[in-house]
Each structure stands twice: as structure tokens, then as C-alpha cells.
Image (cartoon, rainbow, N blue to C red; front, side):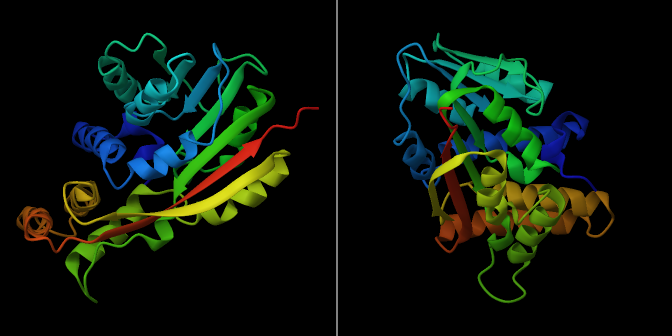
Length: 268
């Protein structure tokens, strides 16, 4: 079955709700915030400049960007109508922030109109990342910055021992909810082929030992397995209960590396 993050509006209402909740939980997760803040600390935006967050989802990261750069215009572009509606409800009093439905491979923005383009956990969910990188580059002014941050899903883990059923949930999540689990290893060549000048390429580890940060891995994987007739609802409920038990007992361990690439569009 296709990656539901690639076409959220085609998913069932149950999965759409899970995706929205997962995006908001991850954006506010104390284990994720240092990954986001690390790349925001490196970018510079002129007063009145423009930042485009491509694939903004429910806007959790986009809101953080708007708060960090109140003098800039921040626009979130997201192909899902359902997620965009949620994002708009959560804007609050941020007058510098707006959200629009749009295709990351065909943005309704003029050439060289943005100072910063951001692709946060987007490219691992698309079939052809080069198309989105090219479009993010097109809208950048000469000398503008592209930020790509994505997870290395090939190394995602949730188990504590061989045969751990929560480890199997992590594997099932990656298999059913990620288009390219190995995307991060391809980022530097993709940027080079696009003509970008890579200024930073680094990794950070998101380790979840408490809270609901990885519950979506369990919920989405078991929902798919129940739908496919692989497991029954009682087992699905038991697996979620086991995640909650570990979170309460202090034995939870979720592991996911993130890679951040920061590149500049040549000035000429």
C-alpha cells in the first residue's frame, strides 16, 4: 500500500487524524526541538524577507519558524487540504504566518521570491525528491538558503530485544508509511546535481524515552495490519497498551537519526 504521508487526503479519516496528531506531537517533542532549532540557528533572514516551508503539514514546525523570525513573512505550503485546515486553525495571533494548499513540485510563487526554502521531513515521503529540490531552488533568490531536514528511517528502532513486538511495529511503520527509508544518504548528491552549494551536512539523534513521541509508529502500523487482516483488533490494542506501559514504566526506547543539509543557491 502507498505511503499515506504522500497523499494524506486519500487516507481514511482515522489515518488522517493519526497523521495530524503525530505531526503535532513530533513538532513539540523535547527530543525533536533541538534538531529544529539547530538549523534555525544557522539561517539569517533580512527584515521583511520571506521563508517558505514546503510540506508544512499541520504547521507545528512552521509556527516555530514564524516565532523565531517575526520580521519575516512565513508561508506554509501543503498538498493536503485536511492538514492545511488544521494548520490554519492553529495560527493564533501570528500575523506573519499563513498556510496555503499547494504542490511542492509546482509552487504558486514567482522565481527568486524567497530568502529561505525549508523541506522538513518531506523528501522521504515523495517518489522523486529532485523535483521538489528543483522547485525549492527556483523560488530562492540568488544567494538564498535551502534547508532539508529528514529522518533516516532505515535505522528507526523501537524494540528492546530481538523479537520485540514494538520493534516489529517500527519496522511495519517504515515499510508502510515511508516512501524512501534511505533518502538521507542521497541528499548530498541530489543537492550537487541541482547546482546547490552545500554548506552544512550533519546528523542528530532523536531518542524518545518517555511520552507519546513514537506512539504514531504503533498506531499507524497496527491499523494497517488490522485492515490487511494480518492481526486482530485485540492484538492491536495490546500493542498500544504495551507502548503506554513502557512510557509509564520508564522502559520506552525509540531511536531515529535525523540529517540536516543546508545549501546556498549560487549568487550568479
